[in-house]
Image 1 (cartoon, rainbow, N blue to C red):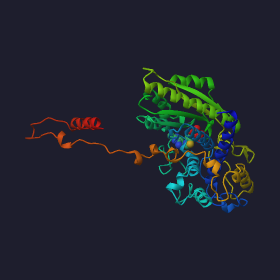
Image 2: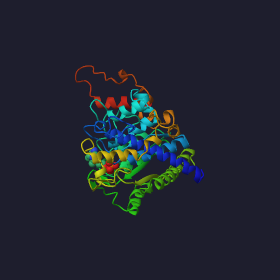
Image 3: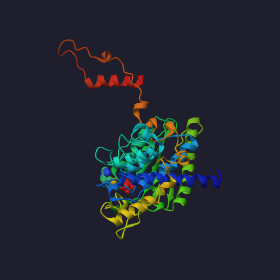
Image 4: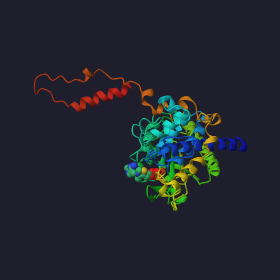
Length: 409
Ligand SMILES: Cc1ncc(C[n+]2csc(CCOP(=O)(O)OP(=O)(O)O)c2C)c(N)n1
C-alpha cells in the first residue's frame, strides 16, 4: 500500500476512533441530548456517574486498528479485553458495528438508539458498567482482573483459524494469575492451534498508583518478554497521527509474523520450530484525548483519569463546560449523520457479518457448540453379585467411561 493510501485510511480510522470515544464518554455521562444538538444542561446528565474512562481510549484505539487488519486479511479475530472495566468502549464498538442493534433492537443505530445506549449504561434496569456476558463479542467478564491471557490461550487452543488479540492492563499484569499466564505460549502449537497476540497496555497506573511494568525501561521489558518466548514490539506516544502510523505498521508486521509461523508449521517445512510470537507493548496516556486539567489538577496521563474524570457535571457549571468541550472535541457532526447514524464512509471501516469481533461465533458458544458423543453407560457397570464378593472403585469405572468419551470425540 502506498504511503498516500495509508494516510487516507488512517485519517478515516482516526474518525472511527473518535466516534468510539464519543460514544464511550456519552455512556458514562449522558441520559439525553446524545448528539449535543442543544447546549448541555444539568438534566441531560445522569444523577450518578459511574464507569471507567482511563483505559477506554486505548481499548478503542486497538479495536479500530484490528478492524483494519480483519478487513485487509479476512481473518477471524476475537478481542479479549483484560481491562473489562472499559465496558463503554466494548459496547460502543459493538454499536458502531451494528451487532448491538441486531441483538438489542430497541437500541437502534440512530439518534433514538444512541440516547438509549447512553442512558442504559450503569443505570437502574440497564446494563453493567463492565464488559459482561451480555456484551457482544465478550468471553472475558470484566471485574476480577487476572484471567484475560489464560482465556485468550483457551480460546486459541484447537481453533487453528482463530487469532486472539488480548489487551492486558499494566495493573492486571501485576496479578498472580496474569503474571503466570505469559507461559501459556509454551503450550501453543502453531499447526493445531490458533494464535494469541498479547497487547500489554502500559498507560501507567492501576487506579491510584503507578505500575511496575510502565516504570520499566523498554530494554528491561524486551529482555523479560523475549525470555518468555515473545518478540516484543513497541508502540509508544501520544500524538494520534503518529500513533496511528506506528500501530498500523506494527500490526502489519505482527500479523505477517503470525502468518509466517503458521505457514511454516502447517506445511511441515520447519520441523521442531519454536516461534518467537509477536506481542505489542502499547505505551499511551491514561485518559488519552480526555480533559487535561480539572479544578487545577492534572487528569489526562495520570491516575485521576481512571474512572470519571470530571465528576460534578450536574451541579458545577465549570465541570459541565469541561464535559461539553471534551465531547465536542470529537466533532460528532463529522461522525454521525442527521439521523444519528454513523457516516457511511466510517461504517465501511468495520468488518462485515461474522467477521465483526462483536459478532464472531468464537465468542458465542451457542453458535459453535457440538453435542458430545457419549458411550452407553451400562457397559461400565460393575456386576455386584453377592454382598462382599466384588472389589471395585466408582472413580476407576468413571475413568474408563471418560476415556471412551475422549476416543469418541
Ligand atoms: C483482582 C482485582 N484486584 C483489584 C481490582 C480493582 N481494580 C479495578 S480496575 C484496577 C486497575 C487496573 O489497572 P490496569 O489493568 O492497568 O487497567 P487500566 O489502567 O487500563 O484501567 C483495579 C486494581 C480488580 N478489579 N481485580
